Length: 430
Image 1 (cartoon, rainbow, N blue to C red):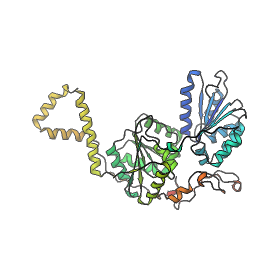
Image 2 (image 1 turned 60 degrees about the vertical axis):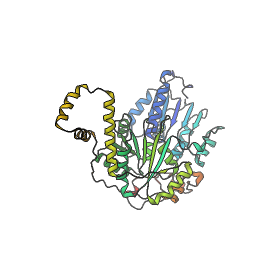
Image 3 (image 1 turned 45 degrees about the vertical axis):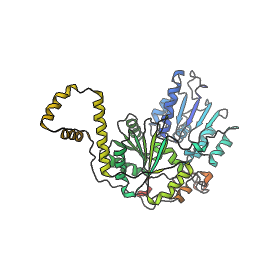
Image 4 (image 1 turned 45 degrees about the horizontal axis):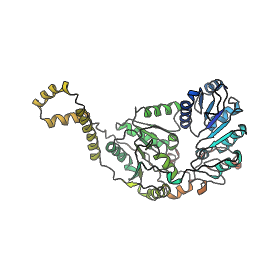
């Protein structure tokens, strides 16, 4: 796409459609990095931004626009995005856009672009609706498949912890103290869950923040920036908020809630073990969810090893070991000459074990045992997971469509759809 663009023509010549704001921003940043030497300008366009500012930026003549479907359609209807010069159109994560109810929007977008174009479609799965787009809106498309055996990555160690719902949070904080991840992502099933886990971690002294779709774009960007530059060490997120997240150095992924389907599990654990580095993925599974673990292992052809959750005393010992490593590292640097005289005076007054114990107490992060209570969520069942598989596994509902778009009976309106409506208000906040 970049090679085909004429940088002298200040017109939109490339269009990328992505399901989420975060992914649109990430793709835009990469295109800018790759195209800046040719003088190619890229503009991300997504909901949550001020429309007037977006229109002003579009008037400056970007060569490539990376947009989310809803906001792109708004601009097309306002005629503030001109697509008559688009030579390359890209649909990124098409199955996710289908899942989020954007399928009709995608059709409308592609119909508005000149038919003389190259269209590239990327999709983890190929349900009927996506295949229909390929056959009706693309000309003699060629299909490239990645083998299913590459669904999971060999350099990610996968574990599961069998734990009751009420013990999950204490188990999580103990694991964090023992494993001491450099950067970690914790996945929660609902927005409310993400907020509660993030607040609980902060209450116990962890540098953690949460991100999900109800936050403003400014807040979401701020949280991701802090995580990227390690001003926080733990990111708590929903699946959608973490979609497309590409931050190097993530050493651990914790599935605080087991994902509804195996595909989501693969996307989650893929946030670690990147660029040839190793990573660890730990999934919390309640006793009733053990059959779901078997389903994930079967689909991903990977093995989750059982991990015994550490006790509070083991977690405390883990923090002390981190302090020991810091002390050893300081000794090895051999930059202690200025401190030796004062240290000798201290040893005349106290024995060496007492002095070292005091130093360790000062350096060790003693975890606050603040009580934290989370709202319970319903366990995942294998039956529900089977309902939620892609279309080739009967996920598509003839009356409602795939991922929540109802058919002609409802005038084609978008709606949030779940196969089984949760019984209470707290469970519906997803």
